[in-house]
Length: 114
Length: 455
Image 1 (cartoon, rainbow over the protein chains, first blue to last red):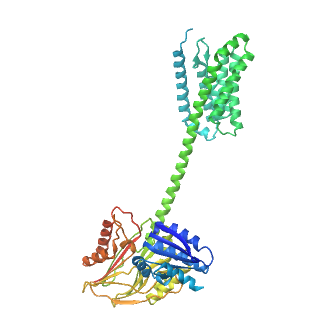
Image 2 (tube, rainbow over the protein chains, first blue to last red):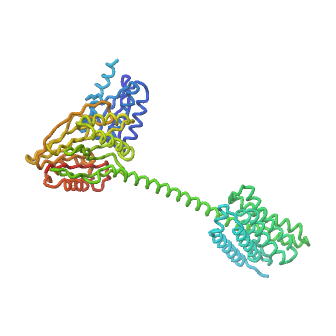
Image 3 (spheres, chains in turn green, purple):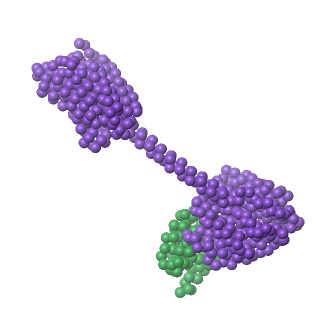
């Protein structure tokens, strides 16, 4: 599982690549928890390089979203590949997360909120 | 008397052998292990006194014969070891045996030699008490033995008369005796230290083994409890045939299925997959199953039952746990299903008449995610030879050696080709195909399959 982080225009971006399954879930959960711990966090999770996500992976993203929203923050997703998108659609998680094709669009959406 | 160097060496080896064998055997006996455990009953102490006293007597004779004919004896060894490892009483007792025996052998050094042996045992015991019954370290034991022998020599010079002869004897034996007794004590100390470490390791191993056994027992119990949550057998339904199978990836899992009697003609069929696996998933599975079951029995419609169950589950869903679930209300009389899909993989409906396959999707979302959810309810009539295959993603996401997934396509093909089988046989067929596909790979996810056939 590849993970990289950056900040762009006041928005945190974390890019996940590879497989987000039960084995990768714990590490990613800790990572995301530390990112959403602060108030009003604005996080983009870039899934452009993510090939596979299991229900453990969905759980981690959902847990982070719940925590972020408790603190008036938010998480949006970008660049989902068709297979990953299908999993989001089947589980109904498309109703929970705002999704963008490109990471830049996701960042701009945050900036326009202000 | 003519003693060669090789004679001295042979003596040395003989004496050392006796000491090693004695040390090894004595330290392996019951009474000594009791003493190591600080169980000093009279019986143990008497045995120790006799054994180490015996060693002391052996030490008087079995020393090393020097070129002059004088013997560098190891009489003090037994009492020293007895004192250091068994305390002052045993040390004194062993010292008395060796010392009194030596006294009655006579000679001009009889008094200092016997006294030194008795004092050696007593002092060894004092050190044992001073160290609060902890055994001395190797170097401490060696140092003490060497010091004891020097004291022995001093006592001889002080008490034995004529002084000249005493001095001559002391000059000759001081180095070999100090060395021999120190070496002897070192042998004992090493063997006893090893024994203590051995026993400690064995005790830790034993504790670890017990812990593991207890955990395994708990896991096994949990597994059996969870197995008990699944229907023991598929119910007999008028005009329908049911088959089901579930296997967790770990000892316990998050998948489940359920058959719920609603009324005379209606059954609720559930298949569900909790996010994650293992114990967290298993706990959440137990909660979800109860919520769904309780609500399904009381509610008139499928969507209402699951909507209320979701509210309850949501209340307890911290840290992002959720469950995808497909609920089917089967009307036996009308031969109709009404279903809701809460974020679950759409089941396959194989139409026996046309040979077509339909995916049973409906708008919905996994349970435990949002408090208020909207679930689309879909109604379908079943004809004879229609087959519905409900499954969890452990089936389609099973991986082979090339990291390819079993996938929906393979599953559909399998169902179409084997639609003539009974529900139970079709479950077996899919199970064995998936197992064969992913042979050599660890089971990645819980695996659950339910087949409903309209007869």
